Image 1 (cartoon, helix red, strand yellow):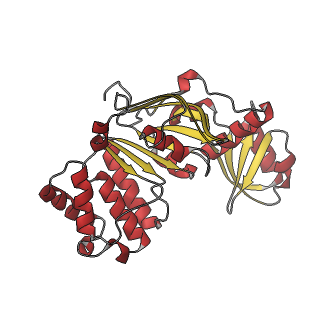
Image 2 (cartoon, rainbow, N blue to C red):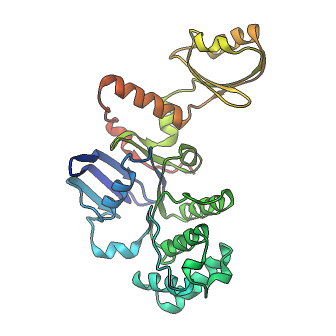
Image 3 (cartoon, rainbow, N blue to C red):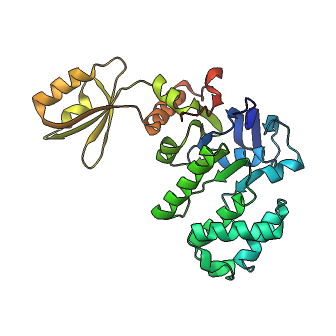
Length: 322
């Protein structure tokens, strides 16, 4: 893996009229990593992606992609799936795929061969002669994904790639992303669903209100927040958990309660108290979820009156765990 980052963003900001969309954002994405750009809707993820791709210029700061400032030759080395899907709907599927691949320098015959192979893999083999507008929304999304990777790019950037896909096609797309990651390509995707990032990514940048909340290697981030989360399953009245001195907060689910302990609390002390009050069927010490870390970080920064910047050591993200 090359030492030069696939993407290096330093202190970029972007405003639209009086609205600040991104403020002082810095991040690095290592080559060959699977990187998650994560945050609530409206956090600044799409604006950040569009600045990386030179669709928008930053008001300040610098961006380097594949080791260089933006230039036209980068377009053939990058695959981009935009949040707002857009295909030539009156063209036939085969024609539009060959056309888009041709823009990226793939000869027509080779583009057709690759397109037919991908359509077959994604169970769209019978759509070659159909117009795009005749396909369902989910099928159109799969066709657009094929157009994103048909020229075999080094860097793949996907903005909310799972939006609108059913669980089966979400799994298919996820598997392809992992496949590209294992082949040494760099994959960046944005999402507001933290569970997707936890299952897929090496490195993350978590954005809220245009600023970085967390950045770095996902495993290391979780390690910094300790193992103070417990999945507690029981029969009986669990009301005591809400006021227990060892408990910071609780989240109730169908079959268990997720308990976050206060700093320095002994999980065994909570177990002892729980056994005395209810019939315990599950007591599992877990890593904190990204959701819990996000809530803690946002709560802390709101209490301080501003979003704190992460340490510089957290900016180098995406080191592979595989």
